[in-house]
Amino acid sequence: MRGISLFAGLFAVVMLVSFVNATYLQVQGPITGTILNNGSVYLGKVGPGESFYVLASATTQNASGKVINIGWNTFTAVNLPIGWSAQASPLYENPMKLKITTAPDAQNGTYKLTLRAVNIQNYSRLGNLTFTAFVNVTTDVFSTSVSPTNFNVGTGQPYNLQITINNTGISDDPFVINAYGLPAWNVSDVVIALHSATSSFVYPIFVDVPGAYSFNLTVGSATSALVSKSFNINMVAQASLLNDYAAVGQGVALSPIIYEPTYAVMLAIHYILSFFNVM
Image (cartoon, rainbow, N blue to C red; front, side, top):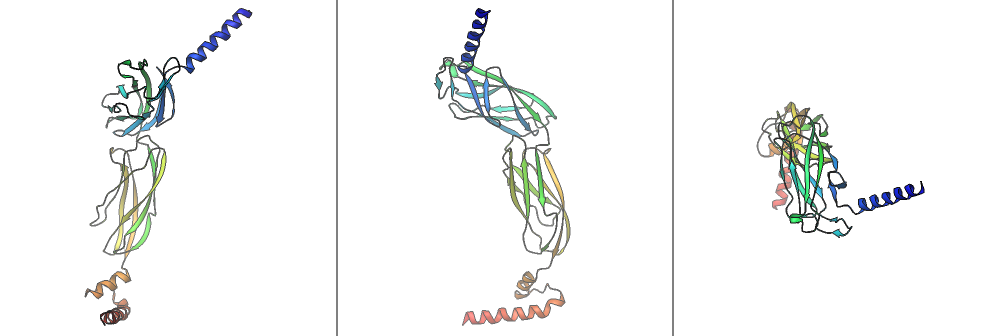
């Protein structure tokens, strides 16, 4: 029995040494961890048509435990679902960045990818390290909020809406903020909200005609029409005393009659100050 126990202990030590000295791939994004040959990992969720990067260190070690700085020369995908595409990392890049783009019509679900770190021509006696990666495709890859959604604004005065985007997916593709339904206003704002992070942005809107406006504000992926959220915004634009005064000074009467005495005084002050400036 003692001999069996001794053998088992030696076997465990040998297995531990083999694991410690095993060639590995150190994944740095979108998740972090150490992958061995034929291992598997879950990367996260991504929208249909979106792209994401898998980052990995080029540094590894050989079977004897020697660390090799640029052991992996490139990082590539060897098997992808139909309609997906990939761009291998450039040679000798460190960290290596493998770009993967999902099919624009990919249905919701979990997909299997086969990825590989390559030691070209087995120069460092590492061979290749192949592993399986799983990705969840879904349109639910971000949450967002808009503030305020009901407000008053002066005509001719830009008003800033506050947009917050929480990117819960693994793609760093840009987001597009746009407003639909405002007269003569068609301005898109492209922003970057990095994966696994919350970012805030300012989106200005503008009208020059008084009135009540109801418009749609949309936040969506720049690369996938299916990844989008929209908000109904209500805005009341009122005549601005300062803007109307400037218009009167240029000979344009736009103000309600109730403001005319005030405008007359302000216009008189304007001309008096102009006179002294000339003097």
